[in-house]
Amino acid sequence: MAADRGVRVYTVGVGTQGGELIGAEGWSMRVRLDEQSLKGIANLTLGEYFHAGDAPELRKIYQNLNTRLSFEQKQTEITALFAAAAAIVALCSALLSLLWFNRIV
Image (tube, rainbow, N blue to C red; front, side):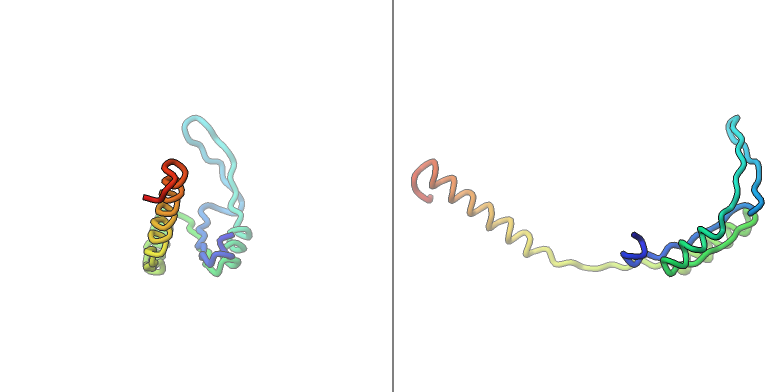
């Protein structure tokens, strides 16, 4: 869906392909990095894949991504929507006036 809408997805892989045992809050689980899926998502959306083996590399990747991301502002004219809403309200008020008072006030 992102690719259809022109959204680029930049994926970041953290960890190892062999997998590691991590634990937090009394839970532990084995996790494995699926680089092929992350690369596929990045390629499909014309984004890029990055691998971070440790925290300093991850910080460097995020700093690099900040220079690549940009925001685009578009102005959209909406006065036609307000004019259409006003016309509908005027039409409804004339119709209700005709029904209740048998005349358009």
